[in-house]
Structures are given as C-alpha cells and as structure tokens.
Image (cartoon, rainbow, N blue to C red):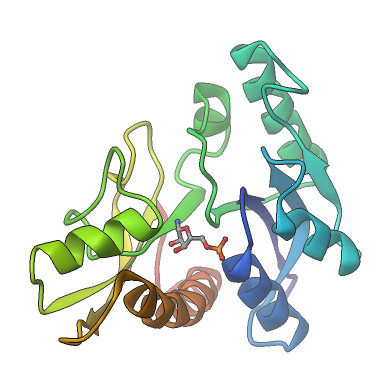
Length: 200
Ligand code: GRF
C-alpha cells in the first residue's frame, strides 16, 4: 500500500507533529510527512522538522503581505509537495478560501476539548483548560474534526474524553490532554488511511 502523503501546518512547539512523524517512522502510520509548513519562521516545530530532514516552508504575511497571494502560495506549496491530507497541528491562522477549496474534506484539525464545548474565538491553548476548570467541569477531552470556513465547526471525526481532577491546574490538565492528543491524532489518521473513517 502506498503511503498517504501528509502536509502538517504548525505555528508553535509541534509536539503533535512529532507524534505523527514518530508514528510514521515506527510504522504505526502508513503515511509520510512530505511538508511541514509554518506561519512562524521561529517555531520550534520548523526546526525540529528540519532536523528530521523533512521539507519545511515558512509562509506568512511577512513573506506574502497580500492575503490572497498567501493563500495561493500555500495551495501551490501543498500541491507541489503532492500533499494528500492537510493536518493542522497547533496552526494559529485561518485557512484561506483557496486552500479550503483545493483540499475540501481533506483538512483536519485537533482541538483540546470536547467540541462544540470550549471551541471558537479565543478558545486556544491554555485558555481552553482555564475555561474548563473555571466551569468546574468533571471531564474534558480531545476532538479531531474536518476544517471548514468556520473555526472548530467542521464534522467531528473522533473524540476522546479526559477526566478533570479536583486539584488540576490548567497546566496539569493541558499535559494530560496533550498525551491523549498525540495518540488520538495518530490513530485517527490511520483510521482514515484504512477507510474505517471515511472523509466526505
Ligand atoms: C495542542 O493542544 C492542539 O490541540 C492545539 O494547539 C496545541 C498545539 O500543540 N490546537 P503542539 O504544537 O502540537 O505541541
């Protein structure tokens, strides 16, 4: 079986990217990461990917001040690398209409809550876990979903819950959720490859 070609979009530290790359290297994922693209030239994820000999690219408003040209450049880069599935892993920018149309139903994202709870505007990173704790939730979790024009609103592909502990701080909760993210992202991509999760 030929390997599914993944393009991973990152902005920050890239632990989910690493989990996916490791799973490819260890044969747990029948996929290959062919491009890591970031809007942040200084992101740890980009340098990690470079160290692993993966093709990397920085595209942002610094390289392309015009939003439409940036969108077109991202689509061109993904196509040139022959990317088949676009994987957002801590990518902090909205995906433009060209990329959305060019990869319709082929862009997935991970979110550190049980969507639709704690999604949308302002709900990213530690803010999600702070809000969960502020509301005394007993459980939170991880969601993997398709990406469409509205943030955190595409079809849900997989979810897994995580219990909130009474003495959790946002950071301890984030760490436990992140462990589940790494496993669930890899497993979900493998299910897409095997056809037990069918994209539209
Ligand atoms: C993860 O919690 C992910 O769910 C969210 O941003 C964080 C990215 O972490 N969208 P990393 O860059 O993969 O380490």
